[in-house]
View 1 (cartoon, rainbow over the protein chains, first blue to last red):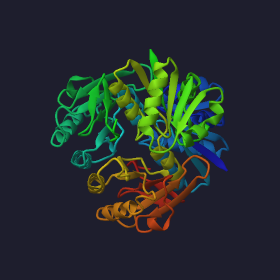
View 2: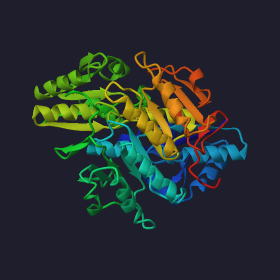
View 3: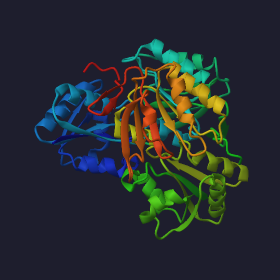
View 4: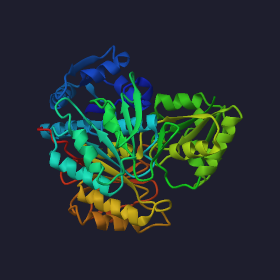
Amino acid sequence: MSKIYVVGLGPGNIECMTQEAISAIADSDTIVGYKTYVDLVQSLIEDKEVISSGMRKEIDRCTIAVTCALQGKTVALISSGDSGVYGMAGAVLEVVEKSGEDIEVEVIPGVTAANAAAACLGAPLMHDFVVISLSDLLTDWGLIKKRLHCAGEGDFVVCLYNPKSKGRPKHIEEARRILLQYKEGTTPVGIVRNAKRDGQQVDITTLDEMLNKEINMFTMVIIGNKSSYIKNNKIITPRGYKV
Amino acid sequence: MSKIYVVGLGPGNIECMTQEAISAIADSDTIVGYKTYVDLVQSLIEDKEVISSGMRKEIDRCTIAVTCALQGKTVALISSGDSGVYGMAGAVLEVVEKSGEDIEVEVIPGVTAANAAAACLGAPLMHDFVVISLSDLLTDWGLIKKRLHCAGEGDFVVCLYNPKSKGRPKHIEEARRILLQYKEGTTPVGIVRNAKRDGQQVDITTLDEMLNKEINMFTMVIIGNKSSYIKNNKIITPRGYKV
């Protein structure tokens, strides 16, 4: 049967990939991916057919993967972080289903950006948390705002994917304003650019001060809950143990 | 300087560990962990000092790690999944801080249980989600219920850690009742026992039917949002692409 692996690369250096992801790439004839991610694994794919394309071409890449699979090739469709978190796993399953073809899809999980960033910050995710993308390219901004309110109301730790881009510079400001309705201004905030890959930069700050730090497309923002605190430049959200 | 790695093993087979986690263990003199997790990495630690203990001894293990580090040993404190998600990262940072000693703690992230289970189910986490533990050992059950309400209100995909144990057989039933106030009974539910390790079992079901499936301590429960659907025995939460 034709086969497509949907491979989560993790944060973007080969050390943070799983053995399983490396094996799936080794087992594949053809690698399909966003150019930036293909470049990250260049050393693993030198003997492979590589088909890369630019941003926002997600469905095109899925269609290419299906076409290659139907030619009898084993395909690795690569995705940064975890392919199952805002990644390519859903899109390729939808495209395969629509094609009506008999193609096996195996999702290979990886370390997602929230977990990679959390590791750089200390231990902010020791308690219940939400993961919200601030990109409204595919989601109604009203729904995103509602979810921010729910996250605040429930005193969740909050991980913000896609916090800012040129097209939506103000979403992070509005997200902060909403969370300030529920969380103190002194709540710890971790801002990690390029978590666990070249160019990593970490800022430990607060809800009050966070907009003074650089936030861009390669940034994960993690905002603590009521118990989170900063100590020795780490954010810790206590699990509740008596220490 | 003394050093403790807090190592996320991923779901529990060596294939799903990162290179970085394997290297951290190789670099360590002493491995400290819950016995079950130590057994999972037996092949990597044959030449190491190993100190294992039973359930609910988290703080004891952190204290042992600190003691060993102060003896000049490099220590790997191991944790299943991601050490930063309900794992040992927070506890060890708290114990080190309380000790006042100068010990470097490096958190090595791994594939967390929600991501491992999602990969077994298809693509349920393609959109905003919450992660909630149903264990009230360290958290007030009232707060957990409130968070379930917030998760329902925001139409989040919901990942339930620790859904059931002998001490709290009914929490999952109450969680389901709360979510049914916001989600349709036909909402897809994925139940994964022993995700990505020996003994893996997957059930794809619905909120209406989920209590007919086995749910135990080794189970992750993932409940879809309004758009999630089941097709070819996979759960897909659409990201919103036009396919």
